[in-house]
Image (cartoon, rainbow, N blue to C red):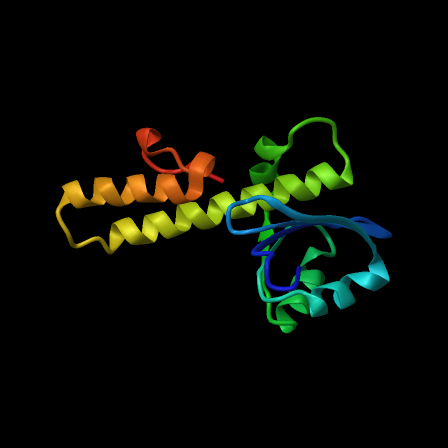
Length: 150
């Protein structure tokens, strides 16, 4: 588990948090409820990864604490997370939606940077986009151009 998780969605609440860990392909590695006191210990044991959480009152403090442990902590506005919510609202599904929104945002930003720095012929860029589609599957659709914006 330590080095497998690449993207972590963290749903913050008053007393308990929910963590959704996904691997490089976006598959579930671990989904777990944590108490407030266990959260920092949990992230200390986790290998370096992207940790995303919805912006809220205490999120800035948690973001700083998680960054100090060597993770790439990011805050995502709730408006970007809402399209990825699958059904009724609960902590586990919210954490999964946060993780999915973070992963799609990372892919989108990577593709945007790659296209801005692309120096080859445009025909080669189309094949590079198809390669992204193979690696990232349903997260990236070259027929729509980029990726679903997060």
